[in-house]
Length: 190
Image (cartoon, rainbow, N blue to C red; front, top):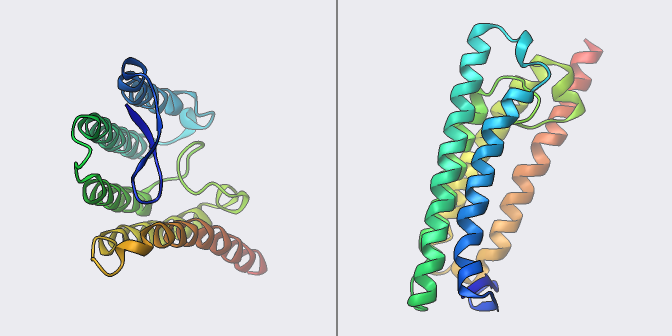
């Protein structure tokens, strides 16, 4: 059964059927359990006010559910590709990633400071103001990145899809880190 694909989504690595059929569902369950456990071991969680705790639980719950749904869809698609190699994986995967990015981006704009989720730089962990500003920018960038992924479905752009995904991902990852440093430096200067 195919388990790894090249940039053009041609299978390049295969696993025995039983192992391949179990890898993604087991990974999905492990991630879901981890996402339920992490908030419970947050060293600061006990000191959060009731509103912050409720907001974080809601955010963690949505992240867990959307991640689980996305990984379940990917697992089904992998199984379908093994039975029907011509199955159109790319459009479904791109739309799924785009929607996932938009949901995460929306949640990121409202995410409160915590120990495990979010853009955790030394500067965002130091100041609530830096956290809020950085996450608002990072969330908007993720929503924009989701829209960019949808543009990948346009026929003239498809051959460059991998490069566009890498560029968008790098932009979404690097810009908030730099921004958090700049905001923190401005706040320190007063």
